[in-house]
Length: 314
Image (cartoon, rainbow, N blue to C red):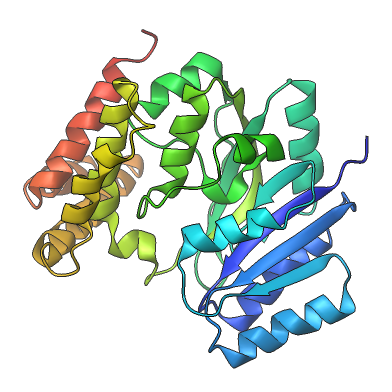
């Protein structure tokens, strides 16, 4: 059937050409029955406002919502959800590019496998659009996704494609800084939503040097650990239990030094992996050991990774 698909996007300070490319990648999909809802979360960005307004005036499939003030990603996405008409909803970021057949592939995969919610692999590109990683991943479903979610967020938020009723059942996103997608998918599996992961790449994801996800990696990790703890205890719906963790890890100044150390450790770790993959074992192992001594929190993350590996197949 030719059900309407709504794509939701929030934009704040992305470069104009990135936003244009992102919107065009949706408007030129092989699946044509779509609507694109874009929330402008930076009402003072006149050039971006003009670009979005031009699209809305020239393409009836585009709807633009302008926040009166900066509300943040969660509130912006929830506002977009209030205006969705589609049977299905797909997520999109304003600096990424969907492949031309993304929506067609995801709709077919979801329906053929009787899922409620699917996500996919991503091609990684740099800020200039140069491809960094383009590899197919693993196809996952059911208990395997649940098992992996106990250790880390295996879903890729910009590739989400799900039935609108899932968003309605969970009342959209909750205000969980840097982890709103992890919180959402944990609540979804807790409510027995049928989730599957495609192995195909459907989107080009732009890695940005000044992205929020990189700047607040430590906060994201620590809040995610608390989410996992509540998930295992079946207490996710008691949002009050997240309050102290969120308050502690969203203080803008208290953890500046630890933030820097954590990012340094993570970058050193990825350098080590690259060296080992290129058979430069000596230097790779040296950097791997160094990454373990930069940040105590990165050591915690490493232990979590080991536990996830050891638990495979259980």
